[in-house]
Image (cartoon, rainbow, N blue to C red; front, side, top):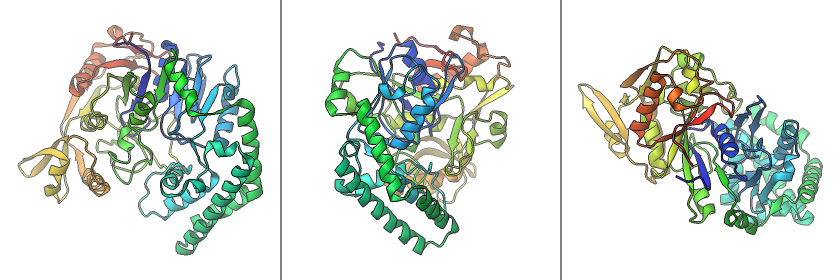
Length: 478
C-alpha cells in the first residue's frame, strides 16, 4: 500500500480524533498540504504536539504544526472569515510563522455570516426536541445555499469585490432581520428576544460592513482566495495531500439519524470528487469506545463509563449539550463501514490508552428492541425473537432511504438497549509510551484483534495518547 494522497474520514458521530491522526500522518509521511473537504468552522479537531503544544483546529488543517504544510479549504467548505482570523491569531502564538501565509481558500466557498448564526440559534431554541446544533450558523448557511438564489448567497469571491460585498451583505442582513422578527412574533420565548438583543448590540450593520471590509483587505494582501485551477495544479503536482474530513459518517444527512444530523455530507465523496479519479489511500477513524456530543441515539451509553474516562477537550456545550460516552458498539461501527461502502484501506484506532486502568472492557454485539413496532424492524435490521424478547443482530446495508425512514430508524434506536457483549481483560498498565504493536500488552492486542477481525478491515494506526508522538503503525502504509 503506497502513501500518495490520503483521505481521512470519521466513522462515528464525530470526535473520533481525526485531527490527531491527520497531524501524525502529516508529519510522518511528509505531506505537503491538508485539504479540508467538508464541514465548516464548527469543527473542533484537537491536536497536541510532541512538545505538548495544544490547538483546537477549526478551519486550518490539523497538520499545521508541521513546518511548510499548507491548508487548502475546498469548494465544499463553509467558511467563517471572522473565526478564521481569530484562529490564525491564536495559532500564530504557537508556531513559528503566520498561518495566513499558508492557507488558500477556493473562491467558491460559501461564507457563514453572523446573521446565519442568529437565525440558526433562534431555530434551535424553537425546537421542542433539540437537534444538537453547534450554534455557529453553519446549518443555516447550508440551508440557504440550497434554497436561495446565488444573488442572496455570499461567496468568498464576493468579499474581494467591494461593491458586490456590501450589496450582498445588505441584502442578507435585511432578509435575516425580517426572518428574525417573524420568529419573535410567532414564538414568544425569552431566549429568542435575548438572542436578537445581543445581535443588535454586537453586530449593527455599520460594524458588519467594517468587519468584512477589513477581512477583505487581509485576504487580498495574503492572496488567500484562489480559483479552481490552483487546486488542480496541487493535485497534478507531485505534492502529497491529506484530505481531512469533519464530523463523522453517522451524522451524514442521508445516512445519519434524523433529526440529529449535520447539514453537510460527511462521507468521503466530496474528497472523491476533488480527486477526480486519482487513487488515494482511505483511512477511517474509530475511538476505542463510542461517543456522542449532544442529543440523539447512543445505544451503548454508560454514564458510569463517562465518569471513569471523561473527555479532556469535549465538554458540555450550550448548544450541543453534554458529551456522552458508551462502550464500543460493533453494530454501529459495521453500519459506518456500510455507509462508506466498505471502501476503506484501513482504520486508525484511537484512545486505546483510556482503558489503561480498567479490569475489564466491553464490546457490545447486539441490541434488545423494547419498542412496540417490531413490524418496522425488517426495513433496517437483521433480527430474531428469543422467547419474548427481540434481538437486533446487525444493521442492514446503508441505503439512500427517505428522510422519513431515517427519522423512523432514529426512533427505533431510542427504543433499543444493549444486549450481548464480549468482555476483554484489561491490561492494567500505562501504554502511552509504547511505540510498536509488538510491545503492547497481550490483552490490548486481543482487544484490537477482535475489533479488526469483526470489522474485516485492518487497523493501520494505533493511538495510545493525545500527543502526535503517541501513535504508531500496526500496519505499514509505506
